[in-house]
Amino acid sequence: MKKTLFAIAVLTGLMVSAQSTWKADGAHSKVGFAITHLMISEVEGHFGEFDITATATDAFEAAEFSVEIKSTSVDTDNERRDNHLKSPDFFDAEKFPSISFKSTGYEKTGDKTFKLTGDLTMHGVTKPVTLEGKVNGIITDQRSNKLKAGLKLTGTVNRLEFGVGGDTPTLGDEVEMTINLEMAQQ
Image (spheres, rainbow, N blue to C red):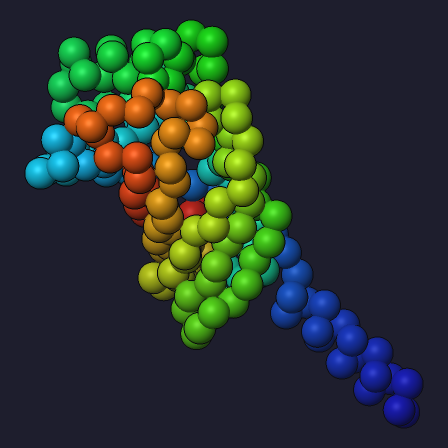
């Protein structure tokens, strides 16, 4: 009897902590950024093409992320600026067509918050970064009967550490990232 109860407890624990694959819904997700311009204003932009996959529990805990962003999809609502950002002066999108992130650690910091560490590769340079995460909510989708999770990831990177743009007084060195995600369990 004790062995049966132990086996049930172990199986229940495995079921609760089972990982599944989640994919970002591109129509309801956004990979955004902001940078200081002329030390008096802030310019915002986003990347329109990305693939974000995670493995996580049903409560979206113990998450591992894999992110691929097309640097050619940068959009700041200004075509001239976007073309300059794609040039060798900044992203050099022809030579480095993608920006990637692969998580290396997950730490639960609160009921719905977590810290995500990983390696960010941009402009051919890989550096460790830490993102703050929040699970906004989890629902069962009425159409698919699968789980959907709303998340927000934020963090700051120093663009100079990645060789993006030169040292100039017209741009801030720090780039704030805000990633709003709607993830669908597969």
